[in-house]
Length: 369
Image (cartoon, rainbow, N blue to C red):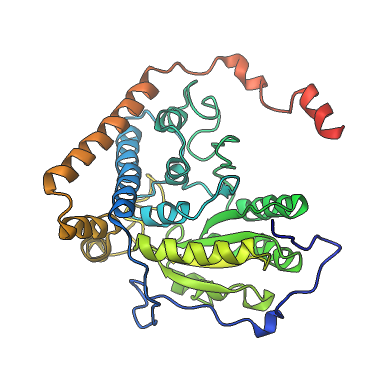
């Protein structure tokens, strides 16, 4: 078991931060001039697993969009379509006990973490069978069993919370890592930098994953960030970072493995800027008129994460078009069952308004013992 330095009792680093080797850079759809390290090829089984995982997220989100249009989902609804490779690839590096926390574009993260699509869809529709009993909606779902600590509606709030999860790991001296997801917009929040500072001071095992879909809520990175290379946001804190092609699941998995190894070795936090792209607007109410349709089409045609894996599978000739159609059929059936479950699940009883507000007395007593 790796021994980590504790807050207030910090051990000397084995390698001074100033002498750390610069992190490798990756080419991305928008920054092709970067030199990319060689990507570790996927086995046929890994490609199949990645394909199925990403396809599940996309089909689920497409169905969620339909249900929102039908008035079955209220409030806000932020779809993950286009960004599937990020969470699917990083989940391949997660070990039992590692924590995951993200913002409000969270459905894909839940599915990748192994949460039941029925529970996720029922929560989106505010039904009793939802993961938060229909009281959290799209942005607030949790699973203690899967170590998923939520979507969070407050921009950047999950960064400080995820840093706290890493602090708990450090106190327990376990081998777990906290994966903290946030977007390019949230990267400008002050609490993000406070978290960076504490994480490096205390050498906390946390991976900060910046999902840079390039437009935040609707403003391009070039117009909202003085430093557009977000992987460098940790430089003043001595936190290593790298840009990753977030549309290539293999590149994501490789970078995630490097970051996780760094954290598990007790070297502190790590930043991964995932260069990705969302095909839909910021939320279902966003027409996304701030970007050209041709730009979106170009990304779909040339960089789509699912299509890249699909092409490799067919090129390997171990599967056929018919095989892939069968996988799609199976995935669609799971999503359809989830939608049917959500529609049939009753709305929460009004009495539920008064539950889950505070921890049960016996639980509080056990925590203070």
